[in-house]
Length: 341
Image 1 (cartoon, rainbow, N blue to C red):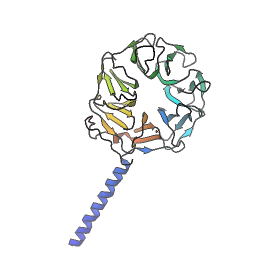
Image 2 (image 1 turned 180 degrees about the vertical axis):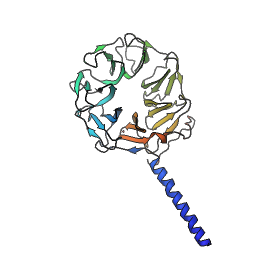
Image 3 (image 1 turned 60 degrees about the vertical axis):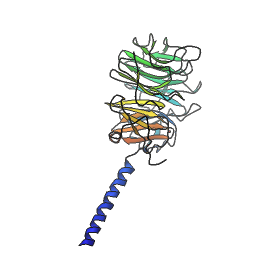
Image 4 (image 1 turned 120 degrees about the horizontal axis):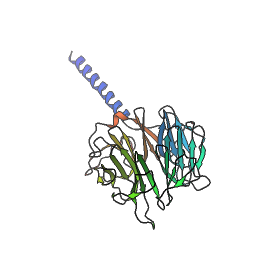
């Protein structure tokens, strides 16, 4: 009897060990690059149940890829020879901002879910796009400022925010926020605010750095500092940009901020994804499987979090990104079980 009991006990331990190992195996990010390969992914968005990924580097790219099965398979769209830095969905319109020098750069538009694309504008060096109702805003790199369209991208006019390099835009109701990354000979840089649909702009009180990410959740405005060498993390404003406070995630380069319900997701250089459920008071690092990849963008669809990196797209169930130990800036941890149509 004793021998049988020991065998039964050993069998239970083995069974529990298998369950534990399976949990470890699946509780991490997985690369989903079938049909895309290991391309650099700058931005991810979705329209309906289709996910779009903008790929490339400044010197060239493979354009926009699309997936209709939660990223399991990707197909290159007809916009296939551009470096796409920004994507925007506004109603039935999908916009893709490219970076290369003319004649290859410009803003492209699709009205049939990415099947066909047409040139919306020859604006060069588009870094960021945002929509506020029927108004579309394009932020231009290299002192190009901000351009605006009121007719779904048919015509464009330059706003009064000129002679600045614009790298992030966000709009909500009466407020539009723009991050300008370069000083040059033109003075202020940081985050500007407009309350009249881009007619006039005022500089907010946030410390003067280059903020690669802006996200809005109700009355809270979040800004992520991605300026090389500063690593000031995430700032929050609770009064529409009048005043700003640095959150506890204060020593990371931030590339992207995404909001889903009460959760804020921050994409970083080398340290993966951080998550906060308390307006940035505390953060949890969720890096398992990503290693030291730079995460450039985040998209949330069908209970998955998708991360664009320098090594294709990675995916993880959103339920796995909650309930872990809070992030501490005194002793940051990097969790990894392995080593960017």
